[in-house]
Length: 250
Ligand SMILES: [Zn+2]
Image 1 (tube, rainbow, N blue to C red):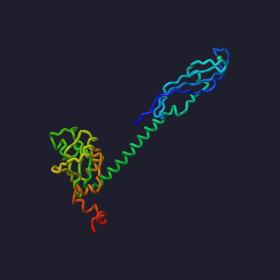
Image 2: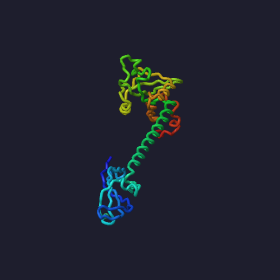
Image 3: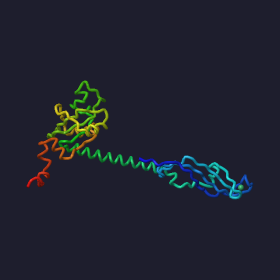
Image 4: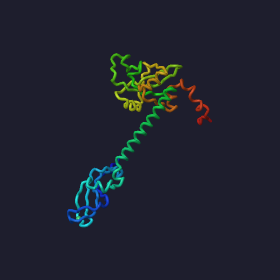
């Protein structure tokens, strides 16, 4: 991202004061008051004022003198600085607020989708999970006495077969210390342990999702799923494909 930033000095006229005594010309005169302000800007959009200095000029003798803001309190309630030069905080709060709202809406939408996938499993589904908390995973401290919780235990489960109440799953052979590394693992065609498989109740999977043990459910496109699990899924999930004319046939 290209940062365009800098600082600027500007002036804003507050107006004319009530007549008061001028020490320079020894007359009673009104004064013009203004503020010199400096602001920092980011993309000329987020502006933050960091210095204000006030001055008055006698309208009779033109003598200029610095003043404190308090001395002008009775004459001017505001500094008359354009809102675009002092609204940086408001805009920043608005931007950050929007990001927070969008992020939470996005995570709510994702979570709802993952839950619906977990509730209606399809062979080929992949569950990203803390394998230490999955019974029978081989990464679980109860099953593997050598294994310590908090070790490399974030991996994935591949759903191989669906029974009436149970799901048969295979864990990835590798697992990593951090959940974010599982995404990397899955992008590199991981191997699954098809010898020591995991049997879980359908309801257990949903409970694990609710408990955060499974934090994401992925469903590969149907073509990949069919290749992966072969005949088990052939019967019931591709009626549309079967009825379509095959372009390879004469
Ligand atoms: Zn004067």
